[in-house]
Image (tube, rainbow, N blue to C red; front, side, top):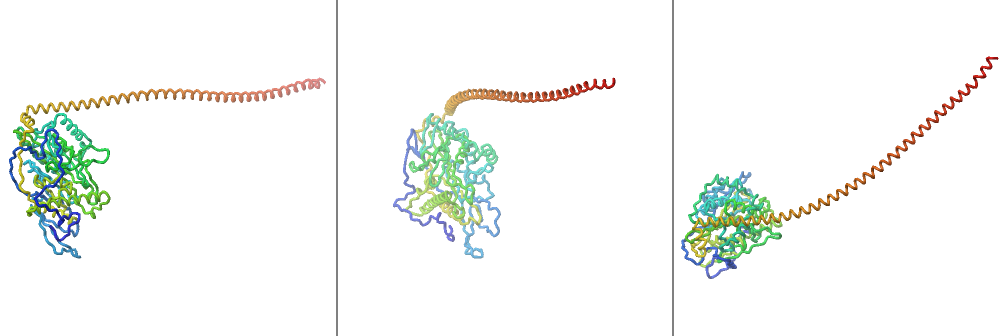
Length: 597
């Protein structure tokens, strides 16, 4: 912990007044609400039966992943030096010349340090794989500043899959054909419930609604390409016991501005409905959170795509695609095995929004409100870790303030040691984010120092699920039941499709009638237009003929007048010639008389 640089007020949680009680107590007083529907047990699986206990004590696993610093800018110092399980940080104030004053070195220890040369596979094998192999309840959290690589570590990309896609592939490779086709057991509202066939069909409809949606089909991940990439790097093998029957459910929620939202629920017309956070015998849960039954790894990837499409993101000056909420993606693996054994393993993957300095992110408006709520919830998480750390040395325990934040309420089982808590701290080791990185490292140091008290490992036996257990022991009968359920769901699908086709047929008939009416009206309209055109043509032709006749009459009259003028001229000429001839005739006798004389 640094005493040279003051802690940011939005993150500082030291020396705050805490209520003190006379009795040691590590659980919050939450509203308890148990919803009994048919046959159910609490979230621990307890039904009052004998439990075999084994005890284990351990620390919180805190891993460090360093992002590649790239090329150091001129004058920028290398402040971080990593070892296998630690990080040395150069600290100290600078004087006016830029040289360190009162410099010192701080050492932070971790379960393991992954440098920038370590790939996604190294992270998965070093921090995650053993918990899935051992079937241990676990909460995996990525923590760090905005843009430090938290989401990349958790989800990765199509080319470099993160820990979630690899965990999904490992889980389904592990149980293989032991996964039941029909969902007979469900975890909902903090308890398990046996589903009859009608309820199972309803769950199948929820499953198909999500898997067949455009968001699931064309999301962040393409399963075929993702599978080829993981299969090339990993060699997961199955080891499910004979007689086991496995049911796998997934949920996806986000905590946005201290409100819990279901990322797999139906898209509402108005604002998204908030989920209430309640408790069932000390086990917190989000009421009415959607759980989707999955049969294959491809189903899970599609559900993940669907949820990621609805998650809250925004752009800041540091990160163009910054998560504006904490998201929790959970896989529940319920196992029924002989003789009469029920167990459940929970794997929760949490992507915590990055802590932010408002000056550097330049947030305003909604981004500012989001950043304030993010910093507040992370402050309360650190506060809870600090109290848990201090309670180790106290006889009179302090109440852990889980109720101050929705995030700490939902992951309190892991904070109390009932589940494994794995914290993957992401760090961008450049001088620009020195102060922010020191706060992150201080946070991880507190988490690393928490030692959980011994907790019982429960092996549950229950008679409530004897019918299901007997079914699980008889593989032939289960195959018939699964086949029957497949046929029933197929029949339901066909009936639904038939009803859809009937409705579509009725709609098409109605559209056909409407089109016929339109065609009839169109034909009548065309005929009317044709008659009008014909009448117009006749009228136009008549007018044209009349004009032509008048023109011809005028031409004929002109020609007649011209001929009359020509004839008159010819007559005048002839008359002139006649007169001339007459004159000549008169002159002829007179000339004869002269000759005789």
